[in-house]
Image 1 (cartoon, one colour):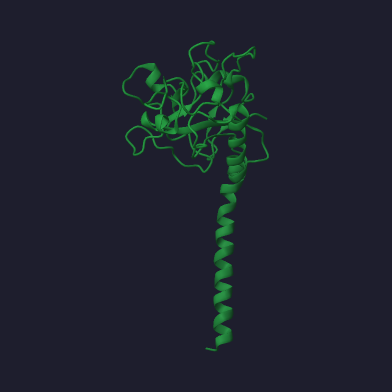
Image 2 (cartoon, rainbow, N blue to C red):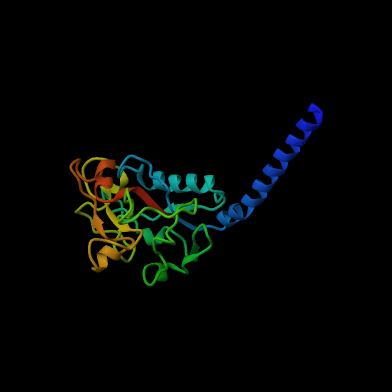
Length: 228
């Protein structure tokens, strides 16, 4: 067999393999393009300081873009508390009307009312933008604490006691309300099973550092929704 023929055969084989891989990836890309909900696969990394709502929204948009769903407008499911003359912002008012589906096409809620009622969020459906399951209770590391700063009905907490790490600008003192993406906790009480209002963050650094978030089973992750 000549060297020329061998090289041509190898080149053709590689091209065929590449084509097969690209075709196989098409359905996943198409499915991601229809994705309207995900949990961030990783956080910004600065504890509760997300750069405010704008920084959190930008993070959702960036990860969606990388996953092939950047044509939509993405918002983080976060509330802010009234402060310095500025009104509170409710997470439920930021995420559009629904329905929302994950990277695998599974509908997690048809509208805002169902999202805050009998939704389909579980460890198996609260997937990342990559379609991956987020580590939960019993996994190492546990990453099921998702930042929300919200009450169970998706509204903001009253002004006063911090539940938003100073409206998502603090990585030291404060506290952020988190929910459990896997709907599991230390007991069978409703807060332990809540996806958006389980407990406030806490820790030796003051409650809002990255280390604080990790100490209770989190990693600064967010829920992201396509708002359009």
